[in-house]
Image 1 (cartoon, rainbow, N blue to C red):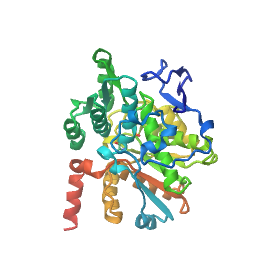
Image 2: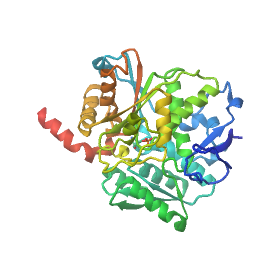
Image 3: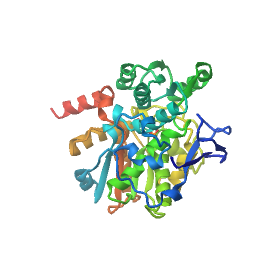
Length: 393
Ligand SMILES: *Cc1c(COP(=O)(O)O)cnc(C)c1O
């Protein structure tokens, strides 16, 4: 038996049956999965690797139902040269680029697709700024389900090609992820699609929360002081915070928490703006633009939830320029040898800002997330890398 007790709306608390396909609550709020953790006090993972190592705190009990491509279990690596440059004692990189389909979207999709198939869905649909498309296409194929993908026509080339290569139906849209979302919403009923958009179904967050469990195990049974997370729809930020709460209720940790830092691009920073304004929600960001495709989310279903997490953790929200985040790809490459995604690289200029203003101190243990592989952005990064090569010739 799995330990799910109920599904509840994050906004209005309304309860739903765990055994049915569900999107948003009637009130428009996202749905949260709750567990009977009192029966798991004392449990610690001892077998398996990756996302499904944490099966007792996931909604599945029969392993034969799992749709997996080998996701999670990513390395937490030290960055000693950068740490010294920044004056930090402990700086870690959670390197998510080695996941199936080259990004941490795999963690969410293994759960979403597993549950959708188990609950009877046949056709899945998603609007995506890039990597969610590749992940859905791959997991749907693995599950024997149809994938219908709507992505902006200017997504990185890798995202467009990988969905074709895994046999998905793809529509390129002259617009942003929010426009793609509208197209899915308009057609899903007539087409019989189940919508697996960020936070519009309950299980992608459950997959992403395993990053929080892994951090605890990676660090030998503690959490860091600060986590920097490149934020689009916010599933990872919300998921990790949920994991910490579950860990406390199972007796793994006390009430202490890492300070959570949301990193966004200056050209699309709705959460940063709302955080600075003390607002509970983040209005639609007009004219969103950034080369970090995963951060190009002008309006998020979970905006209020992210802001709640940032404030509860005494964290921050920081916007960085595209020039700085691209420069950081080269800086991390040339100091530590990791080839980061533009999204992950954005954490570095954000960290510099937080050190400069005293928010992060030299003794703080800091984790930055590289949410995807740099290899998915060769077309996006090529001009900056070529220019760098020329300057150094
Ligand atoms: C989707 C994505 C993000 C944003 O993740 P959320 O959890 O939706 O905030 C960051 N980086 C990359 C590489 C992504 O694909």
